Length: 278
Ligand code: NAD
Image (tube, rainbow, N blue to C red; front, side, top):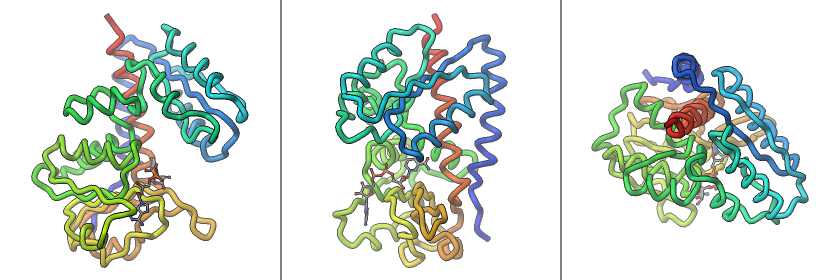
């Protein structure tokens, strides 16, 4: 019988615990989001993050930069937030409009406020096995695995996707947790054979229903990061209905990885506030 890894209910539980911890700490953490332009998906994600802040007792500020803004304008917004002692966490919603130099913007975020964990320093610390802020999606996945007592040490993990927000940090976190990790990507030869090795398979390709049962070892744990539209419906990278017949555990889309990402952002923001406290 397959276990559905219910990220929605685990995230609810984590948010409740976090709310209590924030209340007991006497701190009032604050998160600032920076959004450039009017991409509806980005606006929806930012709204969800602000709502989660409200729920757990984190203050939130939303900075909106016009979609035609230059890199310098976005950098100015980040720099103001870096200097603001009342702001603990800064999240620059990606993707930024094409003309904005995303790497420069990410590198401009104060590393003590880098709750998204995309700054080269945060990624370097993660790679060296001493993470400060790990990116929220892969860190949320590690939390979900732990909540379901899924053994990671010694497991063979295969990650499909090598982005800096998901694939690479996912591989680093799994490595830090003593898994044997393979990263696959668009140039991987014989992808299905690589994926079939996985005890833990994480897919972050952004390709709807790309992962089929033939690519999954019977009994594998399947984590679906993808958020894709298919015939007007939100679906993951994994053909859920078919793959759940072979997997031992699987995340649904929606209700799996997505809510864990937001809960982890809240946890990172509180951690940033605690770190700042003398
Ligand atoms: P990305 O486009 O930056 O990276 C996609 C990766 O998939 C690339 O590394 C690419 O090499 C790999 N890939 C593409 N086609 C492939 C193929 N045929 N075979 C093997 N690998 C292939 O995307 P991303 O930012 O990593 O996001 C991936 C997906 O996850 C998207 O659907 C995105 O919306 C979703 N996402 C979800 C959350 C969440 O909280 N649930 C968070 C971030 C991203």
